[in-house]
Length: 395
Image 1 (spheres, rainbow, N blue to C red):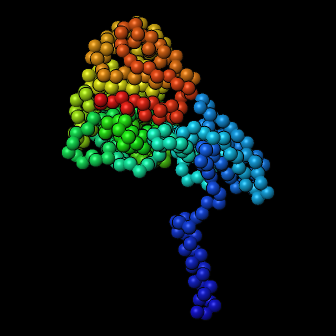
Image 2: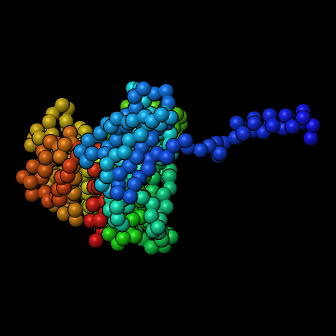
Image 3: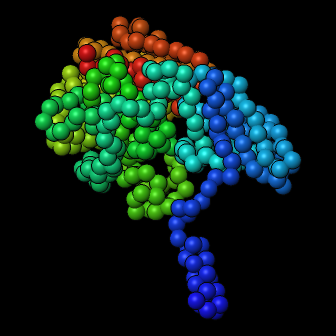
């Protein structure tokens, strides 16, 4: 090969390498490094940075910011002391700029915030274990488009079918609703719903069930970037178009589609619905509109309200004065659901509203189960609530 041909070949190889996918990229640090005792070392190579910190949900109640130290090569690091079993989120701050960890390819989006994740597990069956993909039979997760005549649009939802689902045996269904700013991807990604269900079912702690995760924004077809408006900035108020109806009023479209297209136990005893925050509010509304459609209800850090009755009024005033709402709660009580479950954190900003609702339930003899734990309005709690609620269903 002549020198000219060799140089030409090397130039072409260089251009080809730069143009192809980054299949030969290597991470320049090991981060995070989860140690046997549950401590975790985080690292960032930033030789020109003056200050680097990491902020993560390392504490049970709140996020924590830790300073990182720099070595002679410009590698910043910090070791977080031994952590309980859990899935954790974090991000770096480099000279005042928030950034994800380039050494960690695992990233979650919560509305517009990107965070890295890692999981700590100490033994089989603990929270961290249930949030991981383990050597258990796995269910399938599909993105499904369905027609909603009530909302006058085709919409998307995420559907989990348990391991062994073959379209022959019938299964109960859990409808799992996200919060404000979320979408049909939220529970599968931030909530680890498929991993939780796989592990609970494999351990015999939960019945095999179909889990349906709809998009709770009735003016949207699907998650941001995955329908016709394109790559818009995520957010609850980003899409300005008015919905044709409410999520609660359109929910029967989802139930009918699922019962038609999946092998379900298409009766009250085979249906459950639960949700977090806004989705907990949707669950509350659905329980009043469809008191005999579902047998199990779960309110996770719920935002209970009455869309046509509030008008600036407090929840307590509406419960005490609106006769139609009183009648609907009475009808729900008289329908005798198998379970009405309420879970919330001690520092959640919606705790007062939930206490108001519970007080009214007590006054009219509406039975419910209540669980209160540490922490606030956070995904860590909602994963715990799903784990607990799923174990109570269809038994």
